[in-house]
Image 1 (cartoon, helix red, strand yellow):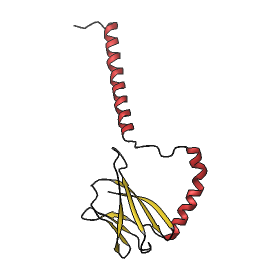
Image 2: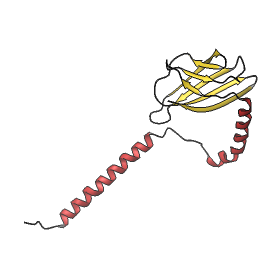
Image 3: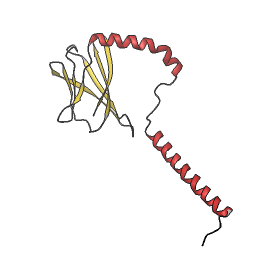
Image 4: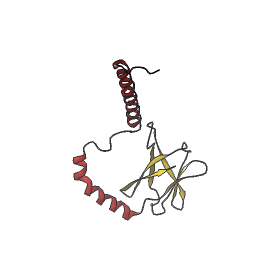
Length: 148
């Protein structure tokens, strides 16, 4: 016993098929927009004009040697190892989640001796993008790294 393939059945198949495609597209678009935390640059043309200056500034910062690896200690605190940073420097860490919900924290890193700077409190587990700002002797260095 075979059923006749009518226009109603064809319309129903088309509506259900396209409904699934549209639902999947909206779901994926929702995931894509919820994972993006903001604009990288406000105006890409202006940023392109400043790019060479930014590269030169980065080279000057690298010559100071004030950057270094940032790791998480066993207790969960952040530790920066940069022996070239002069004594009395102000070191500050700004952390943000690279994906998902926006979460940002900032705190100073305190000198622990021998070019080591450590946070006073533990940082929540997970992946973080760490921006370190070092200021000393009228100069400043800023660099980014990731911590797991």
